[in-house]
Amino acid sequence: MNILLLITDQQRADTIEKSTVCRTPNLDLLAKSGVRFTRAYTPNPICSPARASLMTGLYPSRHGMVDVTHNVPSYRADLQPGFPMWSQVLKQAGYHTGYFGKWHIERSDNPHAFGFDISLSCQSEEYIKYRESLGLPRKPHLLHQHTLVKQGYHSVVHYGICDEPAEASEPYFLYSKGIEFIRSQQDRSAPWAAVISVKEPHDPYIAAKSFFDSYRQEDILLPSSRRDPLTDKPRILRRLQSVWEPLSDDQIKEAIACYYAMCTLVDEQVGRIIQALKETDQLENTLIVYTSDHGDMLGDHGLFLKGVTPYEEVYRIPLILAGAGVKSPGRVSSAVVSLVDLAPTIIETAELQEMDGQGRSLVPLLREEIGHEEVSAYWQEGYAEFFGQRLGYSQRLVWFDRYKYVFNGFDFDELYDLCADPDEMNNLAGLEEYEPILKAMVSRMWSRVHRLGDHSLGETHYGMFRFLPIGPNGPGETGMC
Image (cartoon, rainbow, N blue to C red; front, side, top):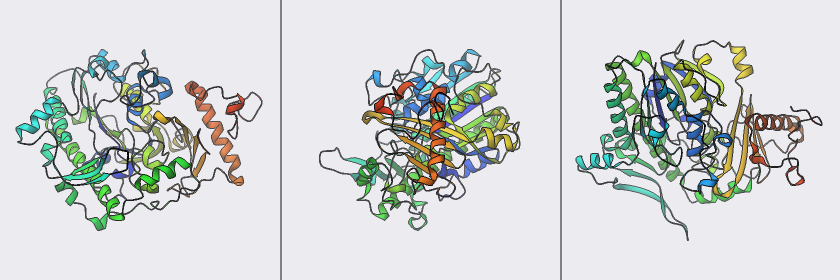
């Protein structure tokens, strides 16, 4: 069984849903040949921790990569030794492996050390030479851009438009390399595994003009939570909101259109690689996984980007598993799943020995080996960790059934009913009538903390840390919930 993993960066789940203005026709077709998960979550809302979890099947508190590699010294975030990645397991089993694009998983920046025979990084010299062969400069020239300006800060581009063909883009180049790899494998007897990891639609949202122009301004909807005053949410979010308050409605629409245009560009490349699988008669023997490391606020709650914003726009990610091993294709699953579940899924798909991880294989869901009632009972809880990056905004998130709880170690907590309030406008954590639900969700958090061995919460029984609605021993004196 071959494995093809397609990863984007900072793509929201709703960009591939029917209700969206964002156009992804090839992903729509991919979903029809597989299973699309509507409640797939990242275990962490920033790149390196989420990507390390995808590769190891472990939560950040276990694998040690709790921040992005380029922003903190190694003692603050370093991949712990002794935890294999699924790619190493496949390599040892005889798979031929390739990695094309953004790594950003650990500090060596060396995919070869983690089981990949061939690798090509983003912004490689090979890509620069490719652009030069097309008569283009090293970087695209922007016809239009919006820049964030504030006294004492460097000016940074938020979004922009360039007049270049799709063939000049890095996603096109990386997918071309992936297609070359796939074509080179068609006559080999050994299975293969490939990863194509693009930076799009990560900010700055730089869109090719042809893709941007395909989105009419009048079709772009402003987020319904755009004017959220955030008065029932942690104060840091109001400070962050001030960064984006100068944006006009038209500028927000432009930013969204650029973001959607980047998603459509990537979707076009997905169509190319599926066609290559068909032409080489490898489609029927390949499991295709499409996902992203985390999402983007994109104007919801008056915010952009990701990080300490614990909302669905950042944590809910696209996830499609299609092709070989999928029974009754075209299904949509509401099971609560996570990026940590992909490593054990890949290993089981390859019919190899289980990894010592913290995720759950999705294979039973792909093969319909679990009934609807079992899905409801077993697959309705999710969990995520955030370590606050350089500013230390510690958070833990728990999803269970319709409710979502956010532990904010730096401010008051949040509780949302995602069925009644999908935009997360009304924080229920301070309401007396929701106190039993709040305590039950906190107990679930402590249960996860214990099971995962998350020691980063410190001496939780000490007087300085006794401020949660219920402690780590649960409702009883010593018993756990």
